Image (cartoon, rainbow, N blue to C red; front, side, top):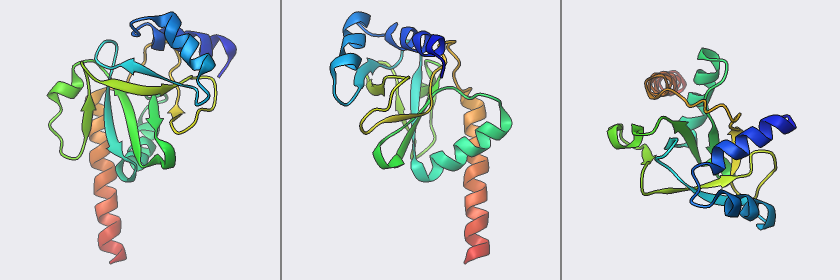
Length: 154
């Protein structure tokens, strides 16, 4: 990311914080380089297992040039896809957790390595999010391919 992209991403992310200055301060001072931000204002987050999330991200990046931001936890056992606000409350898929209003997300600084949580696709500051319908299609394709591989391998 360029310096201007990082600044734009920081501004976009901190715009949802109750105190944006405190959020930036936390990123600067916290040795793990993380802050807590509320979901449900500018984005919701759909949390997938890494087992489904990685192939889903592969499908997404084949379908569109730039999906919305994607986080991964330590060990990449879970991945969080940033989607439009309101998605979490409408999501009915099984095995997918939704973070919307009233929930908080651990978010690393977009321009630095952080302990534990990292950006697989950092925000670019433009507000780009992954369309929930497209994400669902990508999940179906990824799950179908995994099922097909299981049948062929077994």
